[in-house]
Length: 160
Image (cartoon, rainbow, N blue to C red; front, side, top):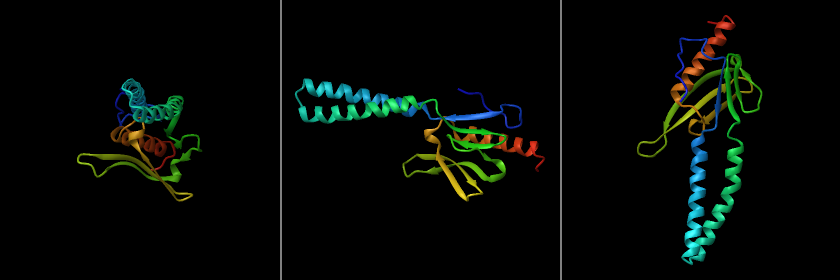
């Protein structure tokens, strides 16, 4: 677990990197293993229709799993005092970003909320919205990071 970021300590880190969550990969590994065990069981039980379905599920999950594992160390976001960079796109400077925030939205399930990271790019007038459940951070940590780096940008550029 990463240490909490103190929003008053602007010397905490020069850059914050966000990756894909490892939980989704673990979920896919468990699903693939389950399909493998299932298709072996139904082969032994001579249930060839169910065996065939699980075999194809297993076969189609393997390339997706390999692709996910290869992409585990890809940086999704880079946030620093210069701005926000999404994947390999150009860094968007803070003076071209406004209304950056995180928020939770009820997703229709009993106690379920979906957490989002959203920011507005002034030029070319584009709203960027990302589901935090797929990323290696949460609402509180990202809110503090955005605040720290926005304040650092303002301090470095003498903006109030």
